[in-house]
Length: 251
Length: 144
Image (cartoon, rainbow over all chains, first blue to last red; front, side):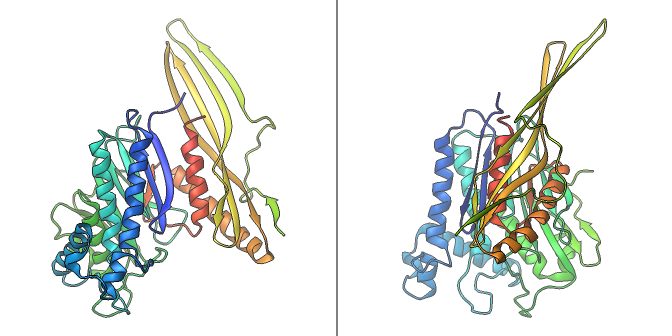
């Protein structure tokens, strides 16, 4: 006897991507379509592939107006978020000033993957990309999904458990491999904060907010309290944990 | 020249019978209820995943499936109880890397599991090969 659904893990966009669909009426072709989508995103947005549209724009070889509509949409959203976060979220930050919307692309592509699954009639699934997660329905036969939040100091522990049915969860922390968040205003890594987890309806936004709050350092928790529709858990360097009122942690 | 080494990842290994699967049946009955419990222990493995240039990692999970039948109503639970695995290496340096990394990763995975969560946000593993093989094995847990 097997439980319903399909699960697949692949290395795409330079990170492990997991698609876990619990609906028994969703077929392999739906999962194929989702991974084909992630590969398409990687080809178009990769900062490591010289022929990607992002690299060609960065080198001045491709005019923004001639770029794929997805590329224009993502870069426009990056601009919005840069303004909204007072420059903390910046696709052109970093020592090299290289165009790098990766911080938004991961969450955005997962949101779009979720829309693809919705279109197939799936109602219970999780899509995971490099530590960020979008949930819908429950981990059947469970009625909800349970997401552990990585402990920022002890790799073998989780700091909290979030239980939810329809939610995006993104975490930004200093321990993340290959992701060097720093305060674009000082050019230095943030201090005073170990990790920030943001939950809300949209993963792209949750991820951008997590990156922003983490870059703010000790002011992270204060800033997350101002967010509308998104909740936060901030783990400070002194070990204190600050939750916004509606953060869906259990226990 | 590639050498292969089969190693348990860490010191703790459950004592398992040599057979791949065992089953035990417990019956309890009273005047009002009839209960039956069947326990099956099996191992499932992910594929041997390439760990950068160091070698390959293949993770094996020990899964305990408990089927409880009370008054004709059947409940099945599957829990994995241990992680083992094997790796290949081709230089002394890669043997060293594997021996350093795998026990830590094993402990991390066991702790995550003990928290009874579906996924972990923010977790990034030093070895994507470990993650990949582990996830593949996890997906097979429900086939036990």
